[in-house]
Length: 295
Length: 137
Image (cartoon, rainbow over all chains, first blue to last red; front, side, top):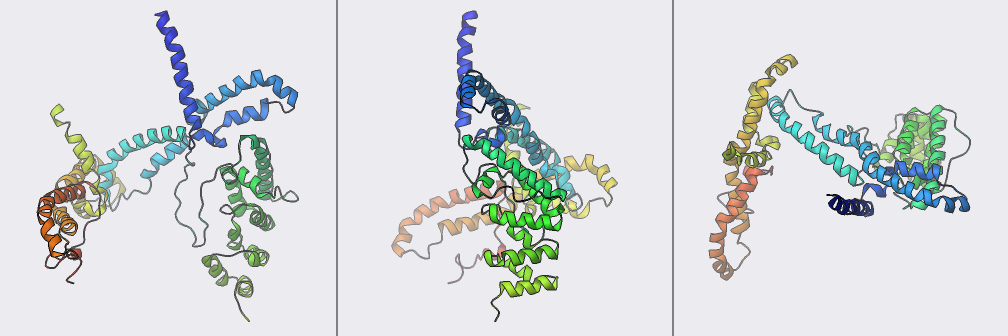
């Protein structure tokens, strides 16, 4: 019995190690995204010494500690962190049911829908635990005709930042976050947080995207203008919300951004037309002056 | 009880076609004529509506839907096997036996596919029985 147990232990450990190695090596696996390494990130930020001597001296402790952090990240932290995404995705099919027009259909398939919800949830948890799936976002009803399409963002997506840049990316993230929060509070900190596009792209994630959306909806006018100007300069293509400044609710913002950006930006037709047809006569006139080939 | 186990995959397969609203014949009739106006009424009816709705859903998929797709399957077969307008007389003669043999095979495959999957039905206007496929030309 003891011999069998002894024989089994190494083979089980090897199987676990091999599985973890394979999972972490998969290009699309969840662990490739630094966002999904919460414990490891925290470990690296707080427990790994910076000076060379201390760094090498601490290696006998930090290497096993780091490996343990990876295992806990993969097995516990990440799977638990995606449960709400999987739940949101699985239960989305219960939204917008037509109980009036399709009563018998909705009532009849509700047991099937319930069973499918369970399958979808379990599959979603397993899939999200293993693969790097973008966070679930509830489908929103289509907004204004000039609304910019959103896309899921993840840290390091645009710049291809590797693990060695993590600390730098963390600092950039913190700097941008502080600045965005100061804009929302109405007391913008002086200057701009960061102007290097690759660093901004590496740091940009769902949290910063959420804050930037709050700036656009909650911040005072001057803070919004500061944000739009910065985003035009610093956010890489695909992330920038430059023309949102031109479709801001406040005519003063639209007019200011039009003057600042009209000659530096190729506008989509729908944004250009919306400005030409603007309800505010000043914005409409500015658009006519700046966006059309009048003589 | 075990002898009925084969019904499960069949029911699951037949559950796909009525996902398209146009394939819910019985359910459409029920929705048209038997829906309580009030929310309370709909809740009160739900113990009946769930089993009846589910049974009607499967009846729609298993029994009624195939009655509406057999002719679509024939249109598929005709377009796949018998559209010989661009072929020479020799080639038509050569392939005639193959077409005869292939006709039931293609028809059965198309029929089963159209029966079980939520495919778009062929519009009646696209089934000109009195002229070759693609029009009179």
